[in-house]
Amino acid sequence: MLRFLLIQVLAFGLACALAFLLGWPALAGALLAAPMAVGFAHCLRQRDWWQRVLHALFPLALLAGMQLQLPGWIWLLAFVSCWLVYAGAIRNRVPLYLSNAHALRLLSAQIPPQARFVDLGAGTGTVLAWLARYRPDVIAHGVEFAWLPCLIGRLRLWRTAAHLQRGDLFAVSLADYDVVYAYLSPEPMAQLWEKARAEMKPGAILISNSFGIPGLSPDWIGPVQDWKESELLLWRL
Image (cartoon, rainbow, N blue to C red; front, side, top):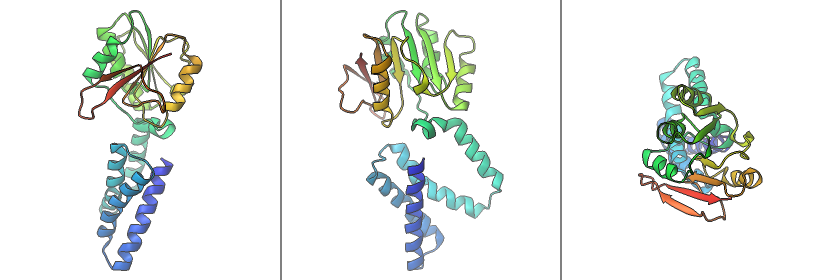
């Protein structure tokens, strides 16, 4: 979040200065700030597509808000809404991702019978709900930091045996689980691997959707077959 704000301040400052020197209107400065922010994000290795989209849209959204002269409570409401949904992105740099049906089928095939399973960053409980329906033999748990996705997940799982708790995924012990699943982001993967090595028992399985562990090849790769060409990556401890 801090890096995002720094990039936006830098892009806005340079764009506004250039627009002022050239005598351009404020709209031209905002339009110029959007590609500049995307360029700075690329230079600072923020290369996820969703980060670039946010950098491109933020200057335009800010200008639109200024032109519309919205009341102050609108911005407070927007901030609270973002916190409720994307608190994980602020704390652990983990945005809200949802696993699709093919990824769930691939994942299910890698989970042994009667396994103890935990979804780190469980979002709205998509994985847990699927396992509760199609793999009732699995003891399924999940942890989610953001308030609103966690609440939605708990409502979805109300009449199932799956359990979703609100909390920091790095504060949860992995010692009792046979399979750990994570759909996070590139940022925390090295830290997750260190945690898995320290806590998971021999023979346990760590599965990541899309994001690898730096410097470590997976033991198995399964194509998710979505538009992002995602993969499930599996490591055995």
